[in-house]
Image (cartoon, rainbow, N blue to C red):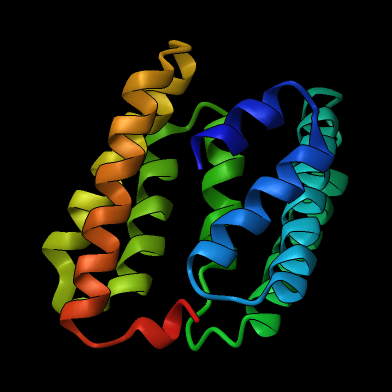
Length: 173
């Protein structure tokens, strides 16, 4: 996960797609499916970058259209993976708010995304997941790869433990 952020920063989108594929393969999806989803995720990052460029140019309408397209692509990936729950809109909204430096709104959508992943019974886990993703973001901004990896690892440990506890690994494949 952390490698994806660094690959995004250096615009290495083919490698980003490959890394996303590896993550989905590690979650139990077959390679062809994981490769397809990895490419879609890479495209999402590129579309979000275009949205950022549009924001900087002051073209809010086209920026919003680009983020809508990114969300539609993430929904496509979710359908391919047969996810029962969708986090695409929250994912794209926190990207947009983060890029606009609207941190409270970004954190809200991170929390909503995580709550969607673990359900209302996992309210405390959703908070811990959000905390760890925020810490990954801070570490990433500081270019502190070791801290980013530490918080991302904790995020995945909490998420997988929560899903196992609910016996809901079908969400991940």
